[in-house]
Each structure stands twice: as structure tokens, then as C-alpha cells.
Length: 183
Image (cartoon, rainbow, N blue to C red):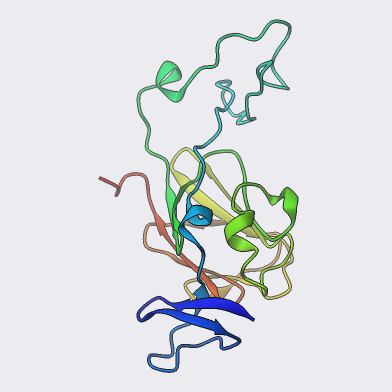
């Protein structure tokens, strides 16, 4: 049993229910605020098309000796807005580096939020963007990934548009916001 929350009515306490008895909305895990906060995105390699995270020695692919000072997107190009996905716990910016949706510990920074959804597969789906187009790919998940209620074919990249409704399994819902439409 887990503490659950109705998106409309708020906390529902410890329950095994999947739907709110008042409005029939899917219940989501009641994640404490300290868990719901998303960390700052990592610095990425400035080489076009790379997207690897920079470590203390630079990019693991492109460094050929001493690491240059870490560069930001502002050093490489003018500010470019990335598409985002609005999850129940907050907004996540999606760049060229893959963002994994899954409960496995190696799925990255969203694991603390996603692990509360017991019907999400260990490696459920992947999100990434190229230029300003956002993509999702179901990773042969047990309970499926859906875009606007259409179940995705496993391992097939699907482009997303502003306003698309994502659903991972039955309970985790999200909304796509394009880079151009954000203010």
C-alpha cells in the first residue's frame, strides 16, 4: 500500500485504489516535495550531435588530453529553448541526451519519482529531442506507452507535438510542451 493523491481532490492517504472514488481520475503517488524536485540538468558536450555528459575531465568521447573549461549552451549558441514534458511532479526539459522512464536504478534522475508507479517497467520508455522535435520510444514495456491514447509499437521512435498527451502504463500521465510555444 502506498500514499496516493488524486490530481483533483488531493491526498487520499494509504490506499490500494487506482481511481479516485469521487471523480474517477487515476490516482498518482503522493511524492514528498523533497523527492519531487528535479536536479539541475548536467553540462553536455558542445560538439554537434554528441550530447554526452561532461565529467571532471571533459567529454568521454571528445576529450584528447586536458579538459577545456566546461561550456554552457550560451557559449556555443544563443539561448535555445528545449521541449519539455510536464509530469505530475514537475516539468522536465528534454535535450539530445536520452531521458529514461523506468524504475531501474540506472535509468537516471527520474527514478525517485517513477519508482512509486509499480506498473512502470524497469526500462519502460525513452525521451529525447533533436533540434526542437521531441521523440518517445517504448522499450518493449509490459504495460505500454501511449500517445493521445494510441499504444506505441515497441522500439519505434515517435515524434511528439505540443499538447500531446503521454501515458506510461496506466497511471503515469504527462503533457508535451514544444520549445516554440513556451514563453
